[in-house]
Length: 93
Image (cartoon, rainbow, N blue to C red; front, side, top):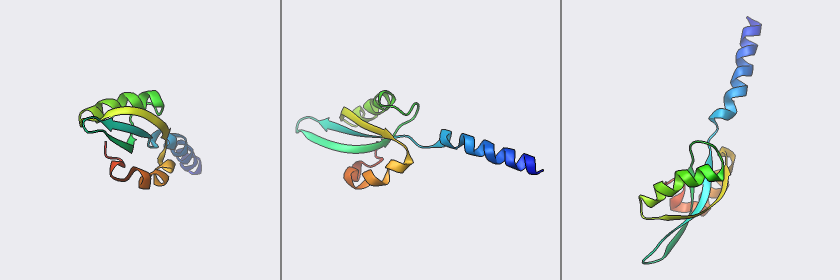
């Protein structure tokens, strides 16, 4: 019984990183009149800049924004330090 519990615990620890969140911070713009914003968004799929661009660009475009740049991709541990800077665009798109 002890071995089964230990095996389950090890398995749970091994799969934990697979469930970690992936986020990107980005810059976007609107024209006429020019508006810029910095935001943080959740990203699905691979946790890299290429995947973040592919995920964010259409979501922002549907609201009239053009993605300018994905600055970084990060996990849950990077959220709190970016919350104040992103303001109303924190996890909005």
